[in-house]
Image (tube, rainbow over all chains, first blue to last red; front, side, top):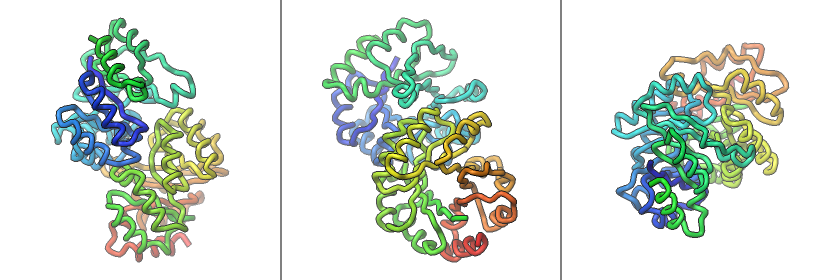
Length: 205
Length: 205
């Protein structure tokens, strides 16, 4: 299991400072949607520059205009870009093709997808799938049951949504474990991000 | 009918130059998703500054983190912000509330929504609804049948997706007309954006 640190609702400078503290314990750095919508691709390129050896995920949440947006993200230094599973299949297709053209990867965010959409998405064996409880659902509907998810074997899985030191213990114990756990505010809002990141790393082993 | 000029795949400077040429013939200025993902909220604030008296739509395509993103857009000078209809209803709800708090508006983009989602969205009488054929569907599936849409009366409607001088004629003639037509590359990629914008205005009367 790898740790993806999600950077959201921060300035680029704060994001870099926090990531520097947690750097040793994390594997992927996610430039969050809020950073991209606030600062644009500069958020991706500055974080790329600060961490030249980490895998950078641009959480650009593409839902149309696939080629243009994926090109933007990869050209700014991203290694993985995200597309919404609720998009038209033409958009998903173009994202996967653009990622392949760059020798990079697409992560398909399953937020709010129907069963039918999931079934048609699982054909994209080269993608990473992200099982995702949205921030708004966590805060407004109190939804936080990520530990009950079962992942389709043979596909690569990430999980996101309010993961804490307590909830990650359930994931470790469950039979089906994701490849990537995406952790945001549990690290970024901690008094000592480096210590919390190290604790997560210790737990997942 | 009002004209919303959608600015996409341009630098901020080009966007301002083109809008200046078309200014007299258009009603709303849309800062497109591609500008926001490339340049962040600076795209909204610079276009706000350049056109202090126009209605500015920030096509931020929110799908989570509603309050934060809508606050960002309105604080940067946007008058209307967009949310995807495929989002969780908690996200839609928070967008509408945040817009009301700012005395601004939300536009709900119906891209790829199911009938069930539409029915539950139509409760938001204070929103603007956008019937939208995505750029990827236009280019990759040749879909361009916007003239067959019928709009729920009592709601405010916008339409987007590859609208040209030819296709707008059908909309004018049809029984049910949208309140806002969103026009992008037909104006922004024209040799003389001002002349084409004037031609659109002439047609819609």
